[in-house]
Image (cartoon, rainbow, N blue to C red; front, side, top):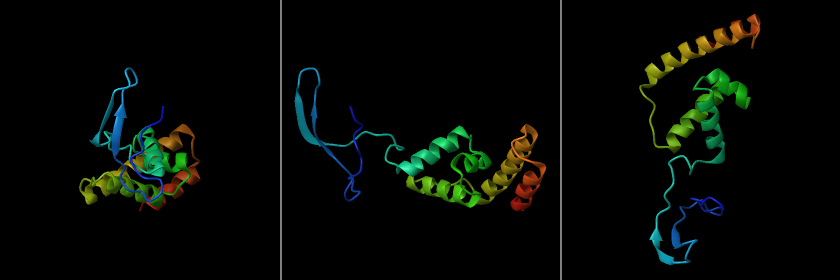
Length: 130
């Protein structure tokens, strides 16, 4: 069984369900039904992948960079695109930026401590935060 697509593969328009059929007794209902999906199901596959990696990395940008092999600015851009696609706004941009630097600094130091990066790599990553 397949998932019901929510977007047209030709034009990208919103799809509607016009008929449902019971698997048990073959009862058919026709009408104009909305497709009940989660808010994440309609995301582009690239954003779905980003969301999954972002959650597995617990929002640590450094981890997302490594997992997807993308740069810090690309992580920020994809997160912004994800928020926009979901109709969400970031909580206080200035506050989020301060938290982001602190989180990245901690992630870099944690990676250094685990041996995931050399002292030189850590020093360069910390310099780039400023």
